[in-house]
Image (cartoon, rainbow, N blue to C red; front, side, top):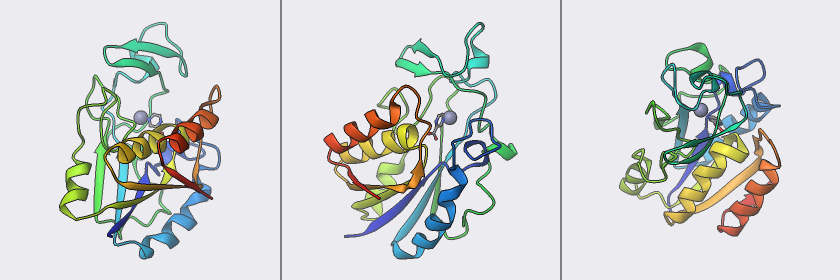
Length: 199
Ligand code: VGL
Ligand code: ZN
């Protein structure tokens, strides 16, 4: 067994003061840093949108953030502008130990498709390349931490489980957006998919 720590989207825009701030988002960083040495590999993901991305409410006249829109690939939540490529909001939080990471995977760069998951874009079929990377390194066991539990962590964990990885989400090292019951739903769905939820 080769294991990896997958650190999802610990970026300024998802931390307090950021454009899509997740409550307590920065609190998880010391624990994540301390865990990195316990894994064979550490992989960071980075939400990385071009300006004018289709997941931004500002790209859809008359639409407010945190509402739903129909996209060709299904329902999509509209977000405030966030994690725009090259901006400080898209940078990793300064406290995160990025130096130890083996791999940084960027996602959400396709202007027309969002990508919550580290494995597939929101059309559920366009791969990011992470699956191949993990297989090539014989990594079979994943521990996921980061932001946000009910969006990018959930989607990444579900795809990983579907792909056959052994997946654990450390909920105490994650924080949630929690809109309209999304956290409770995420926990139920992840549990049902065989993702281990641990504190
Ligand atoms: C995320 C909403 C939009 C996340 C990314 O990292 O959970 N959520 N983009
Ligand atoms: Zn995003």
